[in-house]
Length: 415
Ligand SMILES: *Cc1c(COP(=O)(O)O)cnc(C)c1O
Image 1 (cartoon, rainbow, N blue to C red):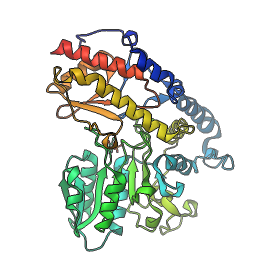
Image 2 (cartoon, helix red, strand yellow; image 1 turned 45 degrees about the vertical axis):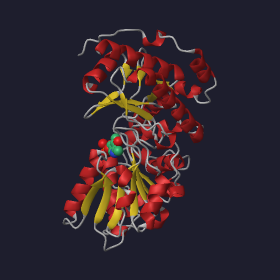
Image 3 (spheres, rainbow, N blue to C red; image 1 turned 90 degrees about the vertical axis):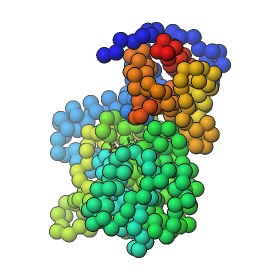
Image 4 (cartoon, rainbow, N blue to C red; image 1 turned 60 degrees about the vertical axis):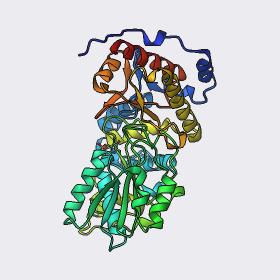
């Protein structure tokens, strides 16, 4: 345990009037009360583990005590007409997710982790890509699991493919007739840099390559328009901005034109009729074929309830607020950042920014430990990144002001 060098009551730090005014006019302000947020803490880590919404607690109680506890195995099919059967849960969650990512419900498969879905999506993309092409083009700083999954799949495919890693901004320049698929994370987990989904997808297509997008830091943070962008495949994470809970099921998107793509992890739950117990795999229609095994009912139920929080949320308003929150944080720290050893690595250009703000600091690891001890919960990422995630559903401008004051106070004491 680190003993904090600075201690203060975060919620009593003064907030400038114009920011209080912004809170008073915030169309999403009422969403905060739907979440359980610990007192005395400003939680800026919803990009790593989203906060718990009250609906999830209620839902998990119902699922365990009634559905599992009382109805037992009958719950797989009970209430199908009212949309309450466990069997239909992956499809119902897929439909809720579809709206957030600009997809049709039958283009989304829910289950497993993001890592596993990356394997499934990349395998489907390679099997669909131009047969003579042997290169998977990726960002050299991509999230480790994306790189590892690609390496594992390449090994399985007898090293026929090459993983070509280039700086994210140079991807377009490396598109050529060798590239089968482009594997990219839209928002960089360290810097918060956001790629132009439509522009990169269009460039990939112009070069004859398919796209596999990782939306771990996009889905639920701002509107994603997969079909408008012409994306081929995508995956995303249920426990970050979607608030589905630790280890929540992830999702896979396959555009309708790819629904005949081979399914590498063909399990019985992706079969057209699982209980026919047929000897050969006959894929279910649409993206459902990518669901491999038995739905994780407890965690899927939590994700299902968490997604209801988005039901009445205008996604443009979500984006507008997210950018205002990150703009405000950057502006509040700008005057002091140089003196405090902070170097902003998140793009100032709104179009190139996700929903986080990151700084380099030479002692980032120790500094973040101090910040967390003082109640400002962000996180450290190697080698020297301080990362602060902003969640427009539950952050106020007062939070941003107090967090910025807290960061300043801790760093002044640290320096
Ligand atoms: C968080 C994250 C993941 C998570 O993968 P898991 O399989 O859930 O561990 C994947 N990709 C990116 C870019 C992430 O940020």
